Length: 292
Length: 337
Image (cartoon, rainbow over all chains, first blue to last red; front, side, top):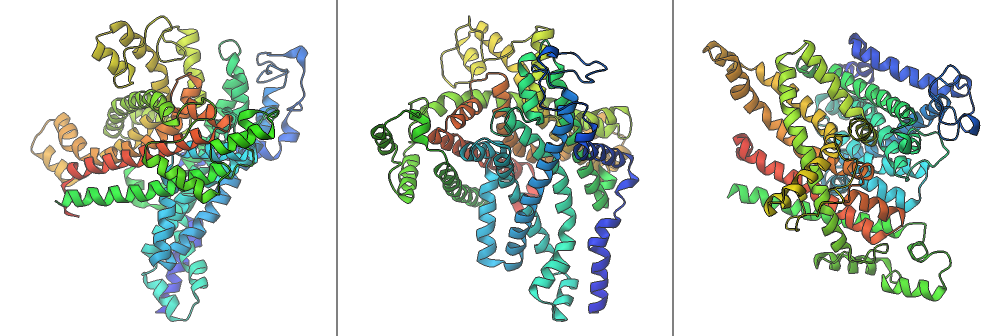
């Protein structure tokens, strides 16, 4: 019986996550391709960028897109395409670090709450409720403003407003899983609490966490760009997309490409992560696949 | 009686959350690395001036005492004095909050009026061109940075077409209506001032479209998926089998049942509206809470930042409470549970 139950777990656990047919849908393939292109731009920015993203050329300021400067130049003559490529690096790092920080911390809190139950669970869930009560950008702005405007502080601020949802998700999953037969079986064969948590409960709770991570990659990129736009995130001359949009703001009526291209870059990157999140959700939940 | 119990439980829950919120905002603004006294008085302030400032704002007291002073103040409607504007924070918030509320309501109206029909349309034409169009637009709405959209909208609506004003709440040459609610559109109507009404409506269009796009996308997606779920139910087949017209089946039988999750999502988008308002107000020079918050945070004005964060954190659960109440009445099944 125990072996059967653990066998069922293996089928539904991490292996199940890896075998979900997300690439059967062309939209998911498109999303993965866009994310792949961004990742390549981010990794190989120094090779792909035709110019130094910080090099000023005052003689060629505000030039429209041309063969020399594919996406034009900004108010200081910097090449927008090169800045955009380096910006991809910054944005993807923001997404990954925010999701890693918030995901690991939130999942840990959720695991503790869900497994311990009782007063610990009650206390931790009240704390997550408090964090979820804040409109995220306002709290992130308060934290980033308090710590001082910088990219690192913006990342800390966004992670601080993101972790609570992982805690709730993990805890919810645990509550529904901990009475299941395969967990009972693992307990019956003498598995320790830590082993049950790490090997049996967490892999089965992974699906919604992965979906949330995909959406949060996108929202972290948007939030960081928003914080930079109002001066609480990356600072000029960093080629961060929000900074670039902010710098192009005064030229929107005359040289719109300054803001247009970084905005499109955010739109594509975030859209791809959202699409992938949708795809993952549909793939993990066949009921939704029929409906949505 | 059951409803009163439900309401009481929710109100107690919100009060508990509010105490947690006040602890967090207080902790954030009192562990700041930069010295608010120096930030307010400048680098050349004397040590006496800094000491006087610290005494005035109770910054020289132990943290628990500062928190208790703050909490007692909140309960008496006193949110402290803004370091930047030198006015009571509560007065500043009272001045700027109606502007944000007006913008958020207008954005929500856009989202409901556009989002629900789009979702229904998309579900009815599932898998065909209208469905694809709505889904792509919804995907863009969920992925577009609101501050960038604002710039594009100003570029088109103000600079290119010249149809709408590029910022502010009312024309410089039009007197603001006498304040009753603080919402210019409503106040203009109440005062019968049509010049102010026209101007304030025109000023609302671009920021409301910008802010409302995200919520429109969310509502359209939710309406679509719940419509698809409802349209597959047996009672819809029965309605069709009875020979009812398709319009009646979709609107009266389908939409009415599909609206319940949509109402929930409308409440949940209110929080994102407040977040989006910070950026939208910055773009459109809209004199609301968001612009006040940004200016306050830049100048390390911690009583103001605390006030805004606290107010925002009160509005969000209250909006959700309102939705829960609506839900309670809309769906009789929740009354039994």
